[in-house]
Image (cartoon, rainbow, N blue to C red; front, side, top):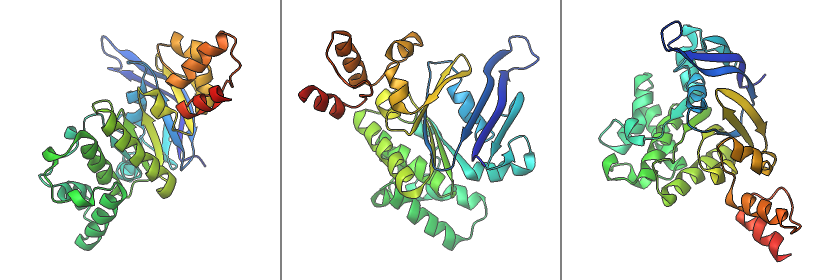
Length: 276
């Protein structure tokens, strides 16, 4: 059974009201536990709306969203779903609410009524997983953007989440902060087996995923491994999207007659191919 399953899912904002708009249209999608999936699309393509269905912030206007077999429309499963799937948003300041890092990480488990000893264990393990143990007693406002996002991720881990949905988590960060967050996410996927749904505008980040989904006007239009998706340079550009710089350079060189592999997506692969 799939961990995340969408069947003919559609979502209409302000359904039945004047000015209603279709944000998602007939999405069919199946994700297995432990996958790392990147989601791409221009603004207004439906990426964030899709993400909010995965932990029942939004409910389908039509169709079904199941998380580990639980229908998000069933209110009895709401808190179980939100422990299974945690959201990390673009601006970490909107998620961090406590005055001290370790108190913020403990906030979720405390609200579930978890015993204090277990909360302490979870906070320790979560901060260690994102390499923020040394900052446990810091005030969050003293941290960098990348460190704040790692605290937000730690808060999700303390809930014993099985899936992290990250909605453009590096959009407000500098390159160093982006690298911090992506490294953390990749480590959690690789070593803890956490399912990752990673929405991004940065193609090099998407290239780190196992699978890439491309959204356009509320529809899922592409689904495949990064090498397959990023070979379609012209098609991606028609959709208003980029590809990793190495993939575009290789594409331009091939058009000039230079024989290069079609599946180049990293700088290292491009350099190796050119040197040969």
